[in-house]
Image (cartoon, rainbow, N blue to C red):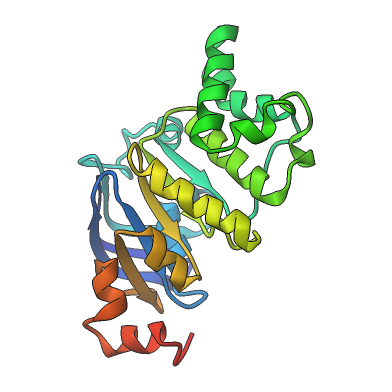
Length: 248
């Protein structure tokens, strides 16, 4: 589903990513772990070209999604971002109703059929395990929801336009333990239909939700393997030291 080949990425003169080659399969959860500033979020944002919005950045190497280099000049970036949803660290609902937050992407894509939109909103709120909690608040402001509900609303909003890949940049770091558990349960459910890539500072979370884990440090991919293997029997001493809390 996602393949990177010899990725080098620069912010001006600073090299943030160094020669990263890896592949991620469809319908799996891949977690990126590592200390702050190690390049994991930068790498995640390559997949829907969010780094393009930052002046002075430069990419070398290839990033292939479904076999196509997404940095080719022929790529339609709007279509790419529709196919690759993104959920950020802090919930960022729009200043609209719960219903309109989810309907937004459909309307932007030119869909006007009211019944289709209503059905899709309900379907995606159910997919995000939120419908039962908000079915009586659909026309109230999204800001009235709790933080955990707002984050699940943002996931529903991303799902409404039917992406194939969902990127999550520390989606539970601003949430309490109960809300975090709901997001993790949701990730398990969603991987049946979507390919998920998650950045997390929480190593226990990576161990719980992911099939494969990549450990980054100083812009390099130190190790990438099945999650169970990485946490029980990593190949590199640096990985072992990070996972056991000797640094980071």
